[in-house]
Image (cartoon, rainbow, N blue to C red; front, top):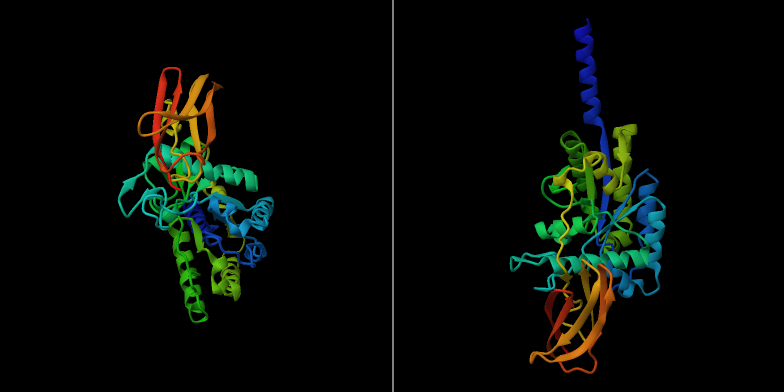
Length: 370
């Protein structure tokens, strides 16, 4: 009798676990480059909230200094969505590869199989973090690599920048690199959706959710720049998403838990043990990050890190080895710093930024094009 009871309890607990579902909604690329669309993100947010859901917005920080945010509406919407309990995840910096110019990747160039060095990737991510902090007032803890393209250098930069979670393809519900925890997305169904595809995609999505609930215990629904597509303007995406969530709520009832990307990842990961393998390794050398923009005209920002206090010099040299400008010559504490280089009076050409402090020195090449 006791054995039978224990067996039934075990079956019941297994079924309950299989029927439970953590549901994440991740929306990438909420606006297209230098285009303003009046619909905004709030109607989608409200449609999700009405069903008890939450949204993780994968935001390209550079959009905050482009035309669609000249009136500040995008920043205001993102601040309000954070206040309502939704999440901002950093989505690269500008979503354009600075090596080949394509928009399908940024942190790692897939067309040329080029691994950007640590300094270059750090500068992109740092600039994005600064824009999000200054415009939206948030410090993201999750990261979505543009095009889901990243390498171990990207992972190390994220750890050194205090990111805890990443959402990309590959092994999910586990640390993808040291203690950088990955919660992979599942499928996307609203990309260029039409009325003729409405029902078939809804049926496919529900079947996929049931399957992933059994195998993963969660589902991450992916949407991609829905706010610039005709289907969003025509409310197809809003109706489809609402009907999908209504179906999920009807099927799972109180067993569905809506979470942001970071909340879901944290619940699966649990607390960190603090072992030496899980602690991010921070490089101890002085760093001079790649100037941005580069090439530039007539101004670029130079960001660097010192690991000790001391007199710090930052100078610009031409190809003949002549110093053409002294940008910095003062005592600085250890930490991150930046200076702007104005080159309006200089001719086009290749220059070198040289950073020196105490016994250390480093440099990189910059290109002025007028």
